[in-house]
Length: 185
Image (cartoon, rainbow, N blue to C red):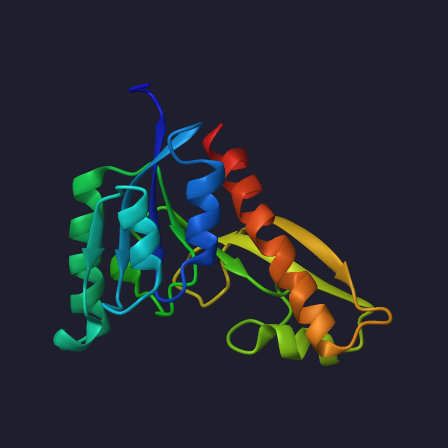
């Protein structure tokens, strides 16, 4: 189907969310046209290779600034003309060079606006609320500050941290797929 909407996926590590997108959306409803990583040793590279998805590896350390790195990422992405770019564990804070040119979404493991930034699952578990969860949001130049597309809640009741962490991670993949469908349909 030539009229499938196109997705670009950015990742830095294992690529488990990327793998979930490939399994549930790629070559079905949508097409993952490119996977991009800033880590030449990322395990997610195997996911791209196994699915024959074009891969771009861009080492941030070889650029003198975040903006210079982001400019190259933008240029590479635009060559594939994605309808949506998905940050699936992409461990970089993006600058306006990226955020003002690329429509992208991110998964964050807390109910935004609570607990932006790092250690969100830990902070969420330790706060006064009886539930935490995940948010899928548009990426803006403010860290974890873009418009929320959807959220899924997880009750903390009776759970130790490990069990809560596992529950959050188990719903994040489905939340990401649901958000992609919501935006691209």
